[in-house]
Length: 435
Image 1 (cartoon, rainbow, N blue to C red):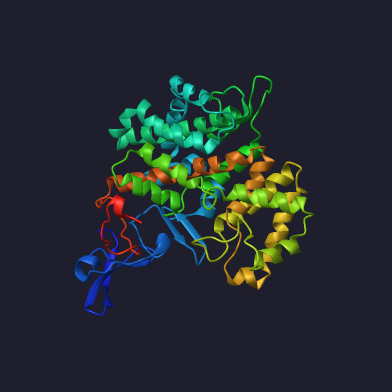
Image 2 (image 1 turned 135 degrees about the vertical axis):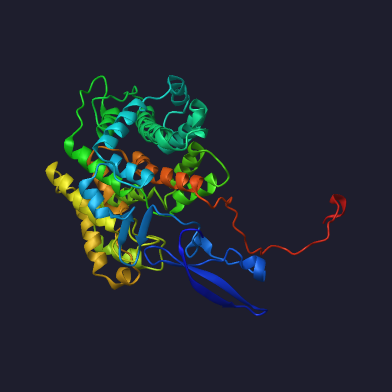
């Protein structure tokens, strides 16, 4: 462990022997026991389903304290970044380790504009997808195909080439996302324009058409920028771990990101905000009885649970959820939708849950997915695109983690062990003799 500071040893008492294991401490006081030599020295391995107690790497990108509700990127609190930064500033921060100055930001933006177009031959891929294909399926397939159209990715690793690599993927993923939506509804593609900012371009490609002289709403642009910032990175979550795991095999950036998109597609990860909207819609259709829903979620006789509540890491209120709730309320009020029934149901659910010891004792607080879907719905974005927007937001973090691993001192292919529980050795029986 080359960067964390060594701080003594831990003693593991086993039936056969005692093993001394090094202790390391991170910059925020996180403590870790290095078990890298455990099996070699003792013959034992650890078992940790879900890897909830295992540190897979060292990283200086993002710090999360789930007990205190802290989220920082490169040392900056998420509240400050969300309040003051454009999404591209945060993307630059994650990749480069510093916030850009004005000159760096202008250069980064120019590269974003230059790299926004897709190779025209890729249009054939969209055209050959079946009608109604989920945008996440299209997104992952198109991203992995980028390595064929832009093979120079294998040579780009630092300096100006790094910015080219990053902006190429950031900008093209936005275009792919918008094109996948247009394909799903059978409308012609809208190309990116140099006249628009990052978020304006995405909304324009989504909603403009030959019969609709669309102009991006500044309220929607501001909200989209905020939500992308909130999703920019979140330490070693499922999809980010996939990026590192796939990347550990020497796979290129595009292949690693495509795998992360597939992981994010899962309803327990990036698909949660879509599940929240479906739950709220169902509650409304059933009469909006929130008290009954709360009791149903607490019952042991049903598998029903409140979507958008609880988090694997946070044991208090998700700091991103506080920001998203405030932004969602402001957006709907300014759009004249303050009385939106789904928002009212969501707020009543939160109010009742936070007064109920069942939820509080289990640390089931609203997470970032609880309010973002309501805001996206108000902006006219269909539920099938919610997880796509999550991917757009998380992309800078994925890139930063791939680059950190790619350029790090420790390069080991991911290869967890297991505790085998199958049959012991059995005698082989020829086919004709088997009963």
